[in-house]
Length: 258
Picture 1: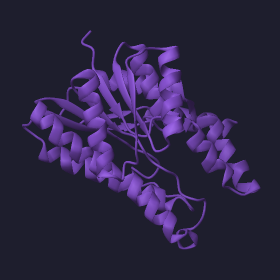
Picture 2: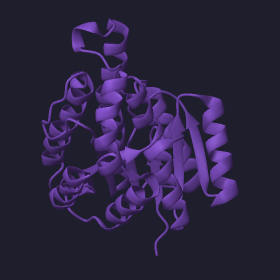
Picture 3: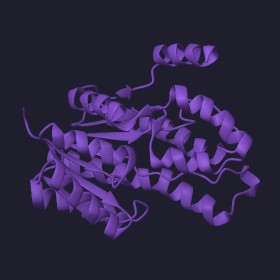
Picture 4: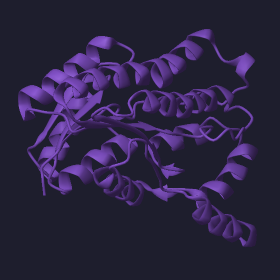
C-alpha cells in the first residue's frame, strides 16, 4: 500500500474526525483542521494517542484563503505531498424559516458552506496541478439532490450549490492530473445532526426522531465506507454515496412498518 497524505477541513469532530480516524487506521497520513485552536490540539492529541503519530493540525476558518495555504504548507512540510483533499467543513442553519434567520447567520452559513468550499477547491486544484496528481472530494448534505424541507432551505441551498459547483469544475479538469468528486454520507449520527435536532419544537423532535432512528447511521460505519471508496476512486468525476436509493428504500419500508 502506498501511504497517502489527506487534508480534511472541519475535522475536529463528526464526519471529518471519523474520516481522519479511518484513514489513520488504514496507515495513511492526515492533516486536520478546525476554527478553534484548543479543539484542533485536542483532536490531534487524541488521534496520536489512539491511532498514529502521522497526523498534524491547522487552525483556521475555511472562509479565509490563508487557512488553505496553511493547510498546504503544513502537509508539504510534514509529509511532502497531498494525495487527497476533502472539503468537509460546514455549519447548520438555525431551525427557522428563511425570513426569520438573522443576516449574520445567513452570511456565516453561506461563507463556510459555499465560499469556504470553493476556496479549498481552488487552492487544492492549483497545488495538485503543479504537483502533477491529486484527488479532491466535496461533502454533500441535505438538499444536494434538490429535496426540500421546511426550515432547512438555507442549508439545503448551500449543499445544492456544492453539487452543481463540483460537477461543473470537474468538467473543467478533464484531461488534467486532478480528480474532483463528491462524498455523500447520508444521515449520520453526529453532534452536527444532534444540534439540528435540538433546534426543533417538541412535536418536530418527535417526528424527526422517527426518521432519525431508521435512516441515521453510526459515524464509523459511514466513514469506513467513504474512506474505502475515495481511496479506490480513479474516475475523473466520482460520487461516493453511502445511502443509495436501494438502501434508502429498504430503510423507508422498515420505517413504515415501525
